[in-house]
Image (cartoon, rainbow, N blue to C red; front, side, top):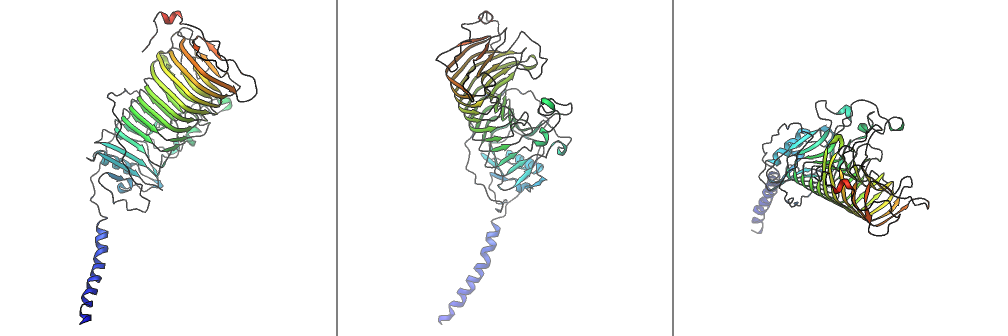
Length: 475
């Protein structure tokens, strides 16, 4: 009788072991969502700034599954690009898969949606425009690698060669992750039209369009965080007509001789915060174009490169307005320039309310420079109009400079001089030797609030008659 209870128990355990794996497999299945995508028009190069700033959405925690995870097992707010057909072998075109993932997430009713580019995989994407507006916030989490086609010969003929990945009319987008965006720019830099080619830097005629890697256009409440991006064919990031931009802890790198590879360029964009980032490239680490105001750059490590620049402004007799710009607590090293304002002759408008403070220079050729005679050729003619530069403050800027140029260079317009330049706690010494070069001033009005090294005795006092007459464009 003892054994009569054992047989039913054994049979029960046997059937239970058969049933459990079936149930486990069942829970991996997921209903497929309908997806679609739109053909976005070519974006015009002259945006208008948006209005109505607001705070960016909170970033949700989103774990990064390994390559072996079942990517179909996603929640309603996680959209793995592999679920839309992306392979991630570094060869197969993933453009349509990314478009479908974007549009499906964009139209989802979830408050925050995460498009996942998984770790350990490489995805090739052609020139693409990701269009909003979307429902709620959106996170593009790049934990793997994104790459464009390799060079001009691999670029589809019908695709724009001026831009690669564009985000258009999007509100509340966060681009983040632990992955890499590889611009594969080397073959673009080798085009004969590029300025570093030919004897003595000469160029040759021919097609010269090269794509900006990441462009945000007419968008707002944007966050870019934690990414690495390298070797863009041209600018790495460009923000046009955007509002409320927060860039945090990004790493941008390109060779020192790579042409026009600005790290971050902003134009007609306001309420910008760029913090805790490292940029090393072949052009400006950050360049601030026309129509920008309320920009704060903090804890930036810049160089080698061309420094941090406002401009160039006023090209082709254009009007440019830039105001309330702060660059602070940063390091600029082994660069052609430190903090620079550059304008073309013939322009109009103004640059005002600029503060450069707590900046350390290491072997910088032009640590402090205002150049109102900016020109890329030798045949720029003299013109009477200029962008008005005023209320520029330089505080606690110290370090070393390349002895080939003076440490401070203020070259201002004869007809529209620079005014109210103030310097305090400036200490710039030659990187080699003991000879300290004198600063250079031309039509520059301002004062030194403390003793400086080297002494600045060339600044003019007061205001010029042309400015006191209030006949300049103050924006």
